[in-house]
Length: 377
Image 1 (cartoon, rainbow, N blue to C red):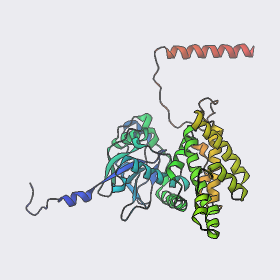
Image 2: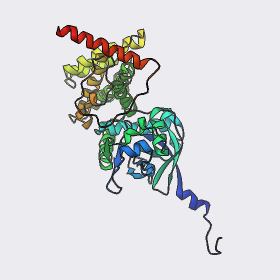
Image 3: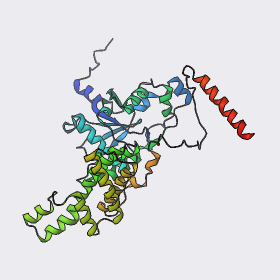
Image 4: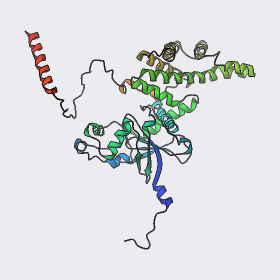
C-alpha cells in the first residue's frame, strides 16, 4: 500500500538514474583497482561455484578526461568497461569505435598495453545511479562475450578462472597514461592514433599484414608532419609565394620516399631510421601491388621505423610505450618449440577424453618407455 505523501518519480528523475552510453573494453582483461572501492577478491571455490561478486565488476572506478565537452568523461568500471556518452558526433558505430581506439592508443602511448576494438566490440548500455555500468546489448567479439558471461555470473570455470588473481591496473595509472598519450597525439595532429593502435595490435596478434599496413599509414602521417615542420615552414618564412608553397606540398613530386631522403639529407632522421623505413616501404609496396604477405621482420622494421620517427617528431622525447616489451603481450609462435614452465601450476582441471584417446595415450606412453629402455641398454 502506498501513502498519500509518496512521490512518484518523474521522467527526469528516472533519466538521471539511467544514463545511456556506448561501451568498449580494455583488452587484455584487467581488473581496475582504486582506493575508493574494496580490492577485488575471487577464490577458486567461487570460480567453480560461479559465486563471485558479479555486481562489483559493474562498479564505476572513475571518469577519465579524454577531451569531451564538459561535463562528459570516459567512465571506467572495475572489469575494464569504457563508457562513452551518446553525444551527436559519436552516434554511429564507426565514430564510437574510432574514438574509443584513439583513447586506447593514448593509453598505449602512455605505457599501458591495449589492443584495438572493432565494431563488433561495441556494447550499448547505461550508467545506473552513477555507480554501475550495465551493458544492455552486447557486441559479438570474444572480449564482449567474456565480459557478458562474467557480469551475469554464468561464465564456465574455464573462462572464469581469469577472475582468480587477475592482472590489475590502478585507475590512477590509467589517468596518468591517458594524459601522457593524449598530449602526444595532440602535438601531432596529422597522426591518427587508431591506426597506430591497430598496427601494434597486428604485431601482438602475429598478423604481419595488418601490422605493416596500419603502421605504414602512421609512418606517412608522421613524415607529413615532419615535412611541414622541418621543410615547408622554414622555407616559406623566406619565400611565402603561392608557387613555392604549392611546389613543396606537391605529393606527386615529393613522394614519401623522396621526403624520407630529404629529411635524412637535412639531418632530421638517422640512417637507422631510413634503413628500417626502406625495408618496410618495399614490403608495403609488395603487399599493395603484388599481394605478397610481409614477414615478421618486415612488420617489426615498420614498427621500429615509426617509433624512430615518433621520437624525432617529439624532439627526442620517448613515450612510455617504448619501455613496454611487446613480446610479453604477443601470441606465441605456434611452430616454435614449447617452453618449459618456470612456475608451479596453481590450478588445473581434468580434460574430457575423446573416444579412443585414452587408449592412444596409453599406447604412446608404452612406446616411449620401450624407447627409453632400449636407449639405456
